[in-house]
Length: 355
Image (cartoon, rainbow, N blue to C red; front, side):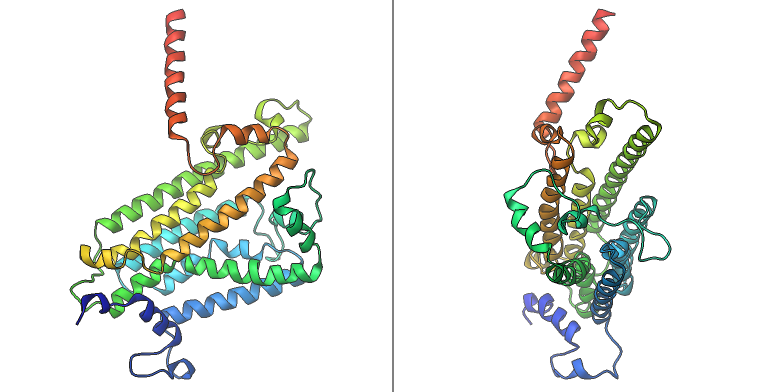
């Protein structure tokens, strides 16, 4: 047998979804057989999509997907557990999910009844309920169209409810690949479910980005708490509190360190789809496997939502335009960081000399 065809990931994935095999194509309609893990993930994704759409339309709160954003990925990885690698992937996604759920909770995202709570402020701008100071040609037409309630309903159905929930399944699709390799390709010498150095690399990178994201969220939360405390007590605002946004800590390096980390950790998660293969030849053959579609679409989502978020910030904070010219959005300017460090060291030496 040709080694490259002994584990055709795309074909095996479709077989798992449709419930077909090399000898039958009718299993899709045979409900007497138990669902495979991949089918169960797809069904769960469908149920989540329907649930958030119905609840959001009835409640008028369109952040229902946000409430399960940090939960669904580790639900999917839990369903896909079949060996040590998929168990490791579940643990990592659970660490990410529990931390993100806590961050969402402390911002008021989870309340009772559960369909209430904090709503993504961007939806109010998209619906035209909150006016923007300046018009940007990139968003002007979109905002005018979404003001129509029927168009907004379709936007809620296809983008907020369906697309985002499918994306949350695709982003953990390396676990689907790991499950298929372990369960369907385990007899081949090319494939192994045993942990290796790529698993270690993926874990270290994933947890590192989770840590950076945690630091960024904590810095943002402390800033917002202090800003609103000063406003409530009538204190005079100065520095970045007067600007209205934080530009210190990690936010002095890039404008969206939490968004950048979120993208980085799911890109790192893609390493596990390669770790599933034992030999270098098999990894080369599957280096561009279909599961990379998940993190690619995730990055594209942030590349679209990031500019719109900044469009809102520009309308609220006059000095944000200056911040944008000085600080990159997602990727740090290494040369600027090195120059800033060198300048800081020179300043410290001068201060010692003056003393």
